[in-house]
Length: 331
Image 1 (cartoon, one colour):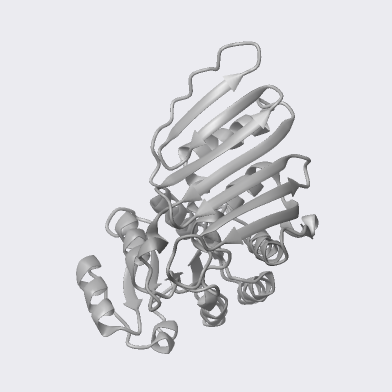
Image 2 (cartoon, one colour):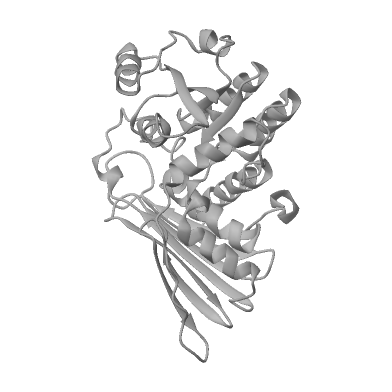
């Protein structure tokens, strides 16, 4: 069993721990760390773990095999690197980092240390996502023409300046780091790397200094076009649609709903069984750390997701001027 520690304690660390603690034979969370003693105490009591008073003490503990990082986005690169240098396997929440260059440095540190690096792009583990991937590989969509997606929530309407996400560094172009990167990853997983981005981002409704609404147009190396919309100030919305010469798919990934339209006939029925994506990704991480198959999100793919985020932010800052990416970097 992989012995892990949770670092960066808040809402999402509890979601991850709740998905696996006492529910799997592959991984156990044995300790935790936050700068806040109150958060450490609360997590330790809730999930039956120990705790470390410093990050350094945790990394030096030989009883721990791995870390689960849900720290602020801007700290991911440093924390991944330090954990790798201490010989710990690393599971880090998305986005991997905020710049492709820092992502490459962190990934190289993991490679040099011989530890597993897993980035938490959990929508790849969803039932709907896996069905779409299988259909694509079988040629069921024919020539893929276009993908479009939106992932939006109203949470930034309640942001105050003291929230760590409530600024343009941690939340570039609004909802990209918290929301849009999920759809970037899904679209690139299905259609391959992005080669060109044109985007706009605006602050329309929130009170803090960050954009709340972003839209981006993509060109994929495999040929299709794409669209991503994300807002931090509207009611919950999450979908991914795919259009091809043989079929169209209308997917609500988080709701486990998939509707198909097939050219010249009736769409076959598709049963969508719910998947606990957080448990699935952490179990796959644990298996990879103990000699099993590689984690399905490769480091170069996670870095490419970050490069797409950077390109969206850069294009939006210049009035939708196209930004060209290196497609080979995402393969």
